[in-house]
Amino acid sequence: MKSFRSLAVLKRPPDELWAIMRDRLPEVAPGIADIEEVRELERNSGDGAVNVVNRWQVKAAMPQAIRTMLKLDELAWIDRNTWDEAARVCTWSIEPCFLTEHIACAGTTSFAPAMGGQGSRVTFEGTLELKPGFLPLGGIEKLVTGFVESIATTIIPRNLRAVVEAAAQYRP
Image (cartoon, rainbow, N blue to C red):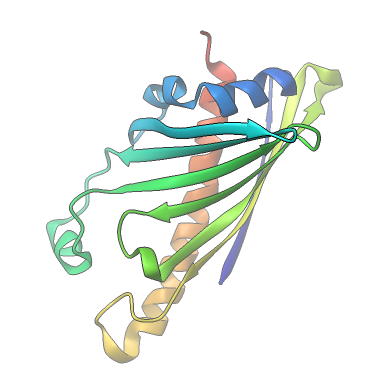
């Protein structure tokens, strides 16, 4: 299991950025490189929290050999979020639409005031685990798993940062 953490400080008050990330993500998505679409599937609220389920579709091209090996038709995932209004923390998990039983990814995104209340400090923290058996490579799977986890735990925070940066620029 690999951990990751990233911090972004943005010129948008935390209340505004929080609301955009929670309520306007499908509208923000077109401004994010490599994201084709974010579609909201479910939303419900109660007890000071909003629960949202989104489906992400990625534009990124992947070599046919890798698509065939992973039996991958599309690169997409479902994210499940719980937005805790009082704590200003979003707890999330990602369920890829491929190798679902072998990949576990979850974490939190927290929003705090910065720049005298004129900006936001957004912290992303999470873990990624690739469970055994995801590649038919025998003895080298452990080596490949470590390599893939290292790459993914660099890419995930970078992508989360790109999303929050696009949200900070969003104007309805």
